[in-house]
Length: 303
Image (tube, rainbow, N blue to C red):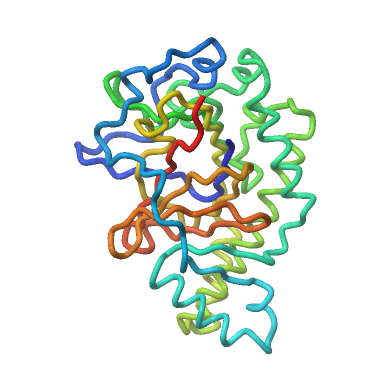
């Protein structure tokens, strides 16, 4: 299962003293553990007794807001949809976005090339491996000690915009269209992010001059993409695909490459709620802009 998130870099909340989260210790590839013939039980570092168990029967996202960007752009429906957007941001801090104008071709290219990258031989993926002192590249994120519990995922994290921030030595050349896909995807989602911020500002009643400055800051801001791969797991109820955390980005947009639910968020009454994949939609997450909205990714597939 693959998932892509675009935004500023994520930092998870930690109860222990603050540490530098701009780098990560190297750890084994989870995908390679599976490929080499994993044991019937989870390796100890992946057993997550330190967090609430993954509840695969968690309430589905009934009532999770869905915002239609087309209706926000249409003067005849804009007022009603702005009200819906305001409510979504206030009540949830997260919503599904449809009719977002990211082309079907652009989404298809990413859904083909991201899984294609993770299907490559390990030595080929290692050409994009993280370097010491940096999170960017293929590997794992936020591993700061040799005793730390680990998430059951592999990832590749790349800086996309502005274009001069790209380290093209880390951008995979295989699959052959990976770079084209990521370039188009990041440009498309920047346009979506600016539009979403514009309408959030309108819903809040921000004055036109300030709104233009807000949109300008998001157009000129940093855009980074994290692509996660969640391999089949021998004990999914004891593992965590991605630990509970809140994003510190201005805005995070998520797209699932598969159809297996895994993303969960905490509702206002403290329940973990599953966000099912909706074809063609993007999940918009306001993260710490909504009082530390917590999310995690549970393991839904058994090996």
